[in-house]
Image (cartoon, rainbow, N blue to C red; front, side, top):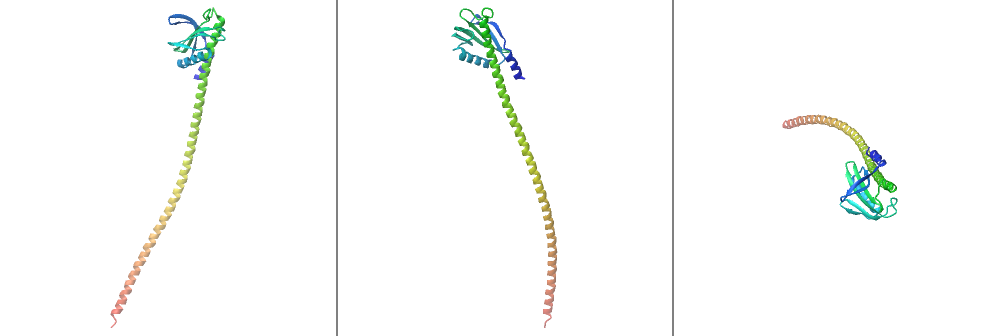
Length: 224
């Protein structure tokens, strides 16, 4: 929704004629409002002035350029005074242009005023396009992150399924071991029973052996 709103602003960058007092002197100029952060707008504006127009002098937030040529506004050197301010609706970029023989004005210099108006509008549009491009990048990054998270969740589910299969296999192995253990217990119990019978037989043998021994001793005692 924010990207759509920003796109709407990018289509509407109205420029109005506004007076501003610079160091106590009222000056007529143009102003455009950009619905973006003031620090970002000001940095972009100063960069544009330095790179496209000329060396900027800064004094307490006022930007001044003397003897610069700005095609298509003027073919002859001009003086530019500019200021950027944060406002509740965003950021205003204001400039006043001394054409040498007149100050930029909608009525007095309509052709130059229109060219300067387009200059400000193009600046605002470029900021909006840049802002949307950044939002697209962030959205693409978020999409990649979301896709990676989705794949990680799927991978986690696959691991859980494998663990379930391992658990089932282990359960089968344990059940088989329990069955074998039960069979072995029966076998051992049978061996115990057999051993008891062997013990009983052995005791019977001992009794028989004692009886036979006593019988032999008795016969020996009867010999004269």
